Each structure stands twice: as structure tokens, then as C-alpha cells.
Image (spheres, helix red, strand yellow):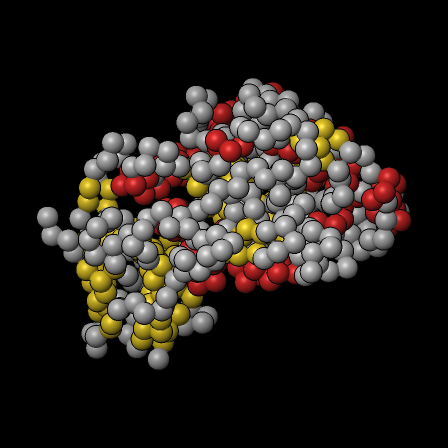
Length: 503
């Protein structure tokens, strides 16, 4: 087998425009995401509201365009009214989703303050587990109506004269899951989601709505769930959600890095199902995809089983990510970019402490996990038009996947900035991969930078005591010839960002 790959990129081979919201994230009232994550009064870098300034800077560096809130499983038992008004009068509640106590020190208004400080927008979720259309119309009125009504005037009395104008809303969370408070059949959920969507858009017709898709591609009801839900909601929603997490409990790294192929199939099946419903409805509207939970998640499972119930902000879901996790996150980002014509929003779940790119120590430092880097690179450099790369790559087989290409890659052309960025992962665990790229329509472009994330140890991670053990460098070896051909050798098990700019 020849260990050599090739790639042709042409500016006319377009997939679609990247919606900036593809690089969204997620903050749930879970573990130390809120309390001890974004919010820690008394921390040396906390601002006047108790928000950690060091965390805000790390978030702003990521250019996160939208953050989903307040859940997640949490939202299916959440009364949003518990999080507004004077903090000292708010109720402490049992959170059945994660078996903790929610003190409600942070709610809708405080989160919107944090969003403004983080230069991001909110993707708000409404509770369709224990509640329904009535509460959804109330929170819409509170958040988005200027004034002159009960709920909008109540917001003003709480110190927020200007409405929040939240434009993206999720109709519940994972309603197909038996673990969900108030879980439903597809018909039950489709009906309540339809009626909730109607009243929410009656309050504010400018909003966009996300219907719950399957909780993962292994749910026994997938994809019938999507078909049934969309048959009920097609006229009123704009997106269907996807959730998927991957892990490597069997310590089979070759199989682990191939799992993004499952993500490709997941996306393809949901698009096909949405288009089937459009055809059945004889509709003109395409339902796009919101991949609003995705990540690696498995490291913390054993530790989470030992947490005592009914505590406040225990260290739940605190995966410590390693180098191979960052490689799969890179592959997952490439999977979504390859269908940027339909995957318009996505949320890396989550943002701080809870299966997150950012970790914090109580009272101490905040640092970047390994997965921070591919997320950062894609968000900063992956804006523009995705191009279809014609790839030839050697392949391998694993216990779950066949014909896995060693090269996973995609290109994004930012015409306005005269930049082209190639994201590439070499999945080979022990050999470098020579790569030749034909940029036939990009005359005059020169290599600006070749960023590489690599490490000898697949299991190497960043910790409080070794925060830079795994970090990228800009010493990649990509070169460009006068005829527009790029040659590079991608190191074994590496994430690569090759940036070009018109000279």
C-alpha cells in the first residue's frame, strides 16, 4: 500500500456557505459549567457580577457565535421563572436530571449579561418535559417584547429595559430519551412541539426554532422519530437537532478515530429524512440541521457514578481530554463542514468544565484542554465557502468501519479575505502521510502558515500542572510550487491547518 494521499481543490466546487453558528457551544446547569465555571464570585479575576474574566477571555478567543442554554437534560424539569428577580428570593430546587440542587443564582438575565460580555448570542431552550406552550409564550414575552405587558414589564422591573431579542430557540431536549423528565413518543412530542412553535412565533415571528431529533444515531426509533416529528412540525420549525458523542473505552484508537464516518452517515440520514418530509408535504422549505450536542465523552463515566446526590455544582462530566480526542474532534468538525450546505448550527457540548475545551480550578487558573485547539482553528479560520475536495487516500479497516481514509480533510475559501484554509487529519497512528494538493484555480496564493497539533503520546493531556503539554506549533512543512501544487508531509496522528493567502 502506497502511503501517499492527494487532493484537488477548485474554487467552483462549492458545498455551501459556513453559517458562523456552526461553531457554537453549550452551557448547561450541570456540574461546574455555571457555578465554578463561567461564574465564581470571589475569584481573583471575577468581575462585579461574579463572572470569571479569565474564562471570558478564553471564550472570546474561540469566537463562539452562539451558546445553547440552560440545557440539556436540565431544561426538561426547569421552571425558568425560578431564575429571575431578586437573587436572594430565588428558590433552591432539586434537579432530577443530574440529581443535584440548583440554587438559581444564575438565570436568564444573568446569562444574557454573560453572553454580551463573551461576544456571543444565546440559543435558548424551553421546557417541553414538564411544561408546554403556556410557559414558552411567557418566556418569549419576557425575553423579546419591548414593554407594556405583564412579563415584559416584569423584565423591566428586574433592571432590563431593553428586550434580549433571543432569536434561536430549542423546542425541548432529547424528548425521545427515557432518561428525560417528561419523555414522549414521537407523536406526543410532535404535537406539543407544533403547538409550542405556533405560539412562540405568534409572539415573535422573527425567531428560528429547532425541533428535537433523535438523542443519538443508536436510538431504536431513529430515524422514524425525525420523520414523525417533522410531519407534525414542518410548517413551524426551521431546524431538526442531532446529538452524538463518541468514546474509546476499548482503547482501540484506530477504530476511535474512524467514528466520524458514523457522524457522516448520521448527517446524511437526517438530511434524507428531512427532505422526504419536505417532498411528502410538497413544501418549499428545506429543514436544516442543528448539531447542537457533539463531542467526545466517556472519560468521566466511572467517576460520575461515585458522586453523592443532592449537592451543588459537583465535578460532573469532567472529562480530561487527550491528544487522540483532539484528533477526533477535528474529524467531527470536518464532517460538519463537509455538509455546511445543511448543517447550519452546531454546539460543542460543553464549553467550561463539563466535557469542555476549557477547564478551571476553583479559585485558581483556567486552561485549554487538547480539544480547544481544533475547535479554535476551525472557528477562527473556517469562515467562508466550503469547497468539495477530491481526495485519494490509502484506507484501513477497523472492527466497526471499513475503508476508512487515513486522510480526512476539507477546504474553506474566504473570498472576502482572499484566504484558503485546509483542515486535515492524518489518522495513521504510526506513519506520516505525504500529501500533494492541486490548487488549480488559486493562482497567486502563498502559504501563510502550517499549524500542526501532534504528540508522541496519544494519551497525553493538559492539566492544571501541565497546561501546555499538548499544544499546536506553526512549524509544519507545507510548501507551494509555482504551478499551484502544495506538498506536505502530515505527521502521524496529527491535526493540520494549512493557511494560504493571495500574495
